[in-house]
Image (cartoon, rainbow, N blue to C red; front, top):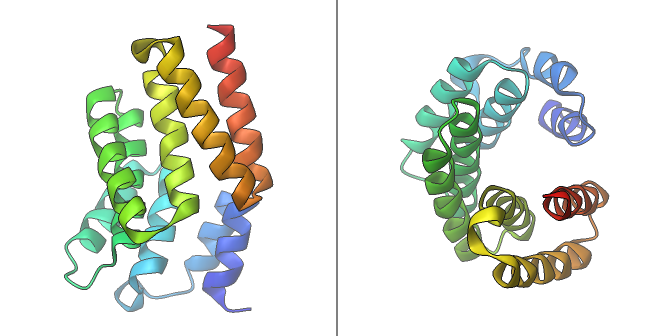
Length: 163
C-alpha cells in the first residue's frame, strides 16, 4: 500500500495523528490534490485550523479539480466554520458540498454532508422534515454499508431524539 492509502486507512480508523505523521514524509510541493485534502482533513481533526485552511484553500484554487474533490474541500471548510463557532458559514459550505457531491455521484461524501446538515438544522426544520431527512439518510447509508457512517447516523438520531 502507498503512503496515501495507509494515511487514508488510518484516517478512517480515527488515528488522525498517526496518519498526519505518515503524510509528513511527502514534500509539500509534491502533494497531489487528494493528498492535500486528506492532509487538510487531518489538520482540522487534530486542531491545526490554520494549516487546514491554507491547504484546502490552495487545493480549491486549482483549476482541474473534480466535483468530488471540491465537495471534500467545502466539507472541510464547513468543519472549520463549525470550529470557529459560525453556524451560517458551516451551513453555507455544507450546502455547497452537498450540491457538488450529488453532481459527482460521491455517495459517501454526500451522506457525511447530509448528516452534518441534519445535525445542524434539526431544531429549525421541524419533526416532519427531520424525519424525512433521516429516512433518506438511513437508506443511503445502508446502501453504502459503511459501519462508521452507520454509527454516526445512530448517534445523530439519538442526539436529535434527546432534544
